Picture 1: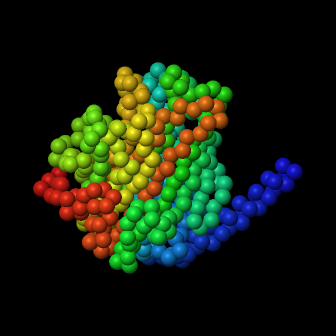
Picture 2: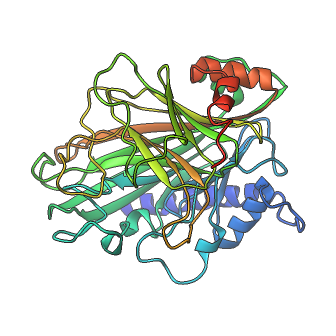
Picture 3: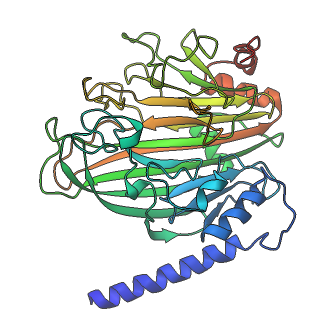
Length: 413
């Protein structure tokens, strides 16, 4: 009976993959496509992978997902093949020898496991110094493919079994299930409590990430525990600004702003419960918002491109979040729930991007064997009529587009 079940599953997956391949063939014969368009990225990715394209009922909103490349959402569009491609893709990373530290393929939403640094780090081996030479992204979230469980033109389900060694010397056995689903325009309105019309084009997708302890012991404050970490990579522009609302009534610091050295004051502003970070891809800097200050939204606005981006994610204001800084000396159980990053040149002048990131993190997965932790993270893009975009920004982020544009209007860096 088990053998027959396996055979039936293989047949079903074969049919699903065939349907996805058929879906992907639209535009296959295009020769001259503009870089930066969805058509360009779709054509490029098809040369590297059998990607899956999710499509909304209107045919214009589309999302590219890849089980082969660590279950990433590579990019999306709100206006079909000729529309803007919203995700950042590192075209140079697909060829050549693998990088021993990180293979930055890009992607509008990738799932990493943390913490990156700290006493329970998954990126540093035990008894090593936390410096770049010793920093290595685990293969399961860097180079290895994930198992495809099911797929159609609306949703993809994938999973990955992993064995990871943390800095404390604990070997963690775990499994991650990940679903990516495109969100129809009417559902976007309902989820965000906004009104859309024909003057605005939109695309949205939802990810559901479930981590299971598949080992034989409980993860606690002695063994350490992992966390889930959604990172969204987008293309920067001179007038792009990241917007992170925070809870003014909460106590403690508003943000950690010195992950990679203190962010210059002309690049980060605080005003009336909102943090702004310049996202032009010209200066490397990262910040984090602690859970007691975090809200369930963050976003960005590119005034020069007319694109408003909203991210929505789970937050536990009373949860235990892990410290991800590159030091084992700080309390490992005090960390951030939201991060934002602007790429820039390294000291030697090299640069992987430019890009910028908006990130959400789950609490620490202190789980008994068989227990699960779920983290949900969604991404939305809007482009078109500025008055409508302004209404969305005011409703979700609590600030107008004019306020966002004004933050760094006098900055020359």
